[in-house]
Image (tube, rainbow, N blue to C red; front, side, top):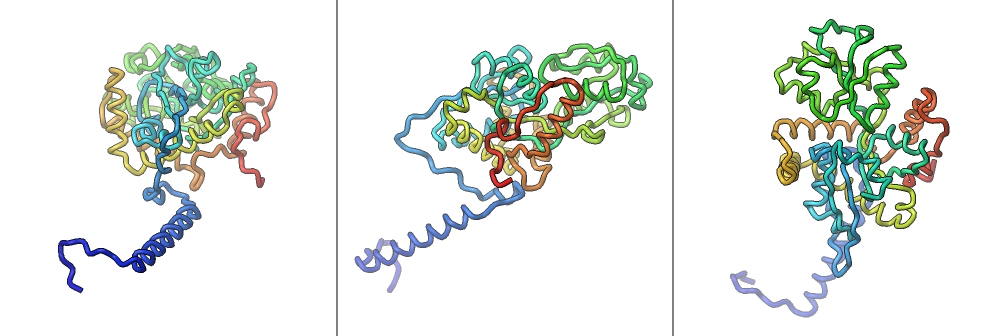
Length: 356
């Protein structure tokens, strides 16, 4: 038969055979995709997002990042921009965070539904009677570091004694306080919000920095790495996982399905962001521009690249709070007197594997 530019109608029998073949291949592909489990984000680059749900009322949910909009939360923005939340039937309202909108306080006061927090901060809130639930563990390695300038005579941990240290005002200081206690450091704590100016101009001798954020800002300001004394907490026996997705227990119990959908869509957003970093940074910069936040592309690229390494730090563990990580964090808080009672793992992380 000669094929021309004109559609050639199929006989009924051939149409039935073609339909059956197509259906068979679709089933085989679907089974194949559902059985595959990848340990690396590169292997998930071909993943197909959940098909869009039609004729369904979207369920509203408010999300508050624990800080200003930046690539630290790229997976959230990508999940929103690419329609993953909508695919799960969610209408996610992304709120603006920062020092004037503390994440844990907003969650407790019902100003948001779901937020991101450090694991230690969430455990500290539970100690105060606020029953937070972990829906997904984003980071799998600590990015927290202490930075000091060598020109101030700081070349070792003990040189930090009797120096001034800048610590963030809320939700992020527990590990630094434990570090000072473990090393018997008597340091004057100076509260800081988000700027590195006090460090650059000299009023403080040291400060907390995140590898993906303030550390790179300091380098961008013209200070060379060899001019800094750096203590990565992950190298000091304090490799405590950080960013997780949290809600109040009452919110979770009211709608477990919504919480699980949000967590799964967020992980899909992170997988896409890790595999399409240029596009993800474009989305982040658009969000930052909308909120009139200062931004530069190289810094956001650094942040996303570093966050990707943190998210993939434990091989095939993506989005899961491992029991060993939880116990390490809780033991650290308990042994240093920051909490007085322990929380069962499965009560804190409802998606814990049931076969353990």
